Image (cartoon, rainbow, N blue to C red):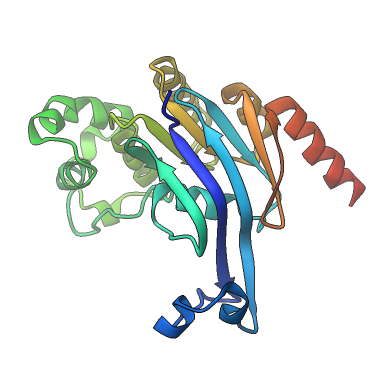
Amino acid sequence: MTAAIEVDGLGVRFRRNRRGRRSLKDLFAGASRRSRPGEFWALRDVSFTVAPGEAIGVVGRNGQGKSTLLRLVAGVLLPDEGTVTVNGGVAPLIELTGGFVGDLTVRENVRLTAGLHGMAKDEIARRYDEMIAFAELEDFQETPYKHLSNGMKVRLAFSVVSQLEEPILLVDEVLAVGDKAFRDKCYTRIDELLAEGRTLFFVSHNERDLRRFCRRGLYLNKGVLVLDGPIGDVLDRYNADSTAR
């Protein structure tokens, strides 16, 4: 069976306060020669494989490389070392409100965003009412996006992205926003997607959410993959390390 996600020897390096800029000479130099003062490895020598239909939670303290890993899988960052291979499209439930245009209406943004993610025009038309209803924005379809509240923006973005047919879901703390009623709707929608056999790659600090959705976990510490195993074992190790600090 072809893996959904294959990560091999993955490493990415940043310069403190901003991404390092490298010249062509740097790119063709050896790893040791490419190092610069103030640079650090956000991830180093990370390897794992995700099977289709697996639900994996990524665990670790802030600044340990979790969101960086998610962005590498999403293809919005490129690694400095190693490879990331994603076999199938991704539905990125990360940085949800990015990509929406403030001066366009809700209706126009739904069509634009869904189209940019590859949804065909007839499919957008067929699903439009469902997306608006899920976001609870029936009375705001002609309202410019910039006039929506933050909660409305998140509801709209989740509604659109969660309708994509991509086989892999990338989720980064999206369930931490919105009121309880909307979070419950998000939970139900993710349950539905998992029941369809989608693959879930989930970054969260919420242990209850991780135990609910995930069977396997990855524990990152200082950019290194410390443990890859059942989610309960991974959370126990993470909590033990946190208590020992």
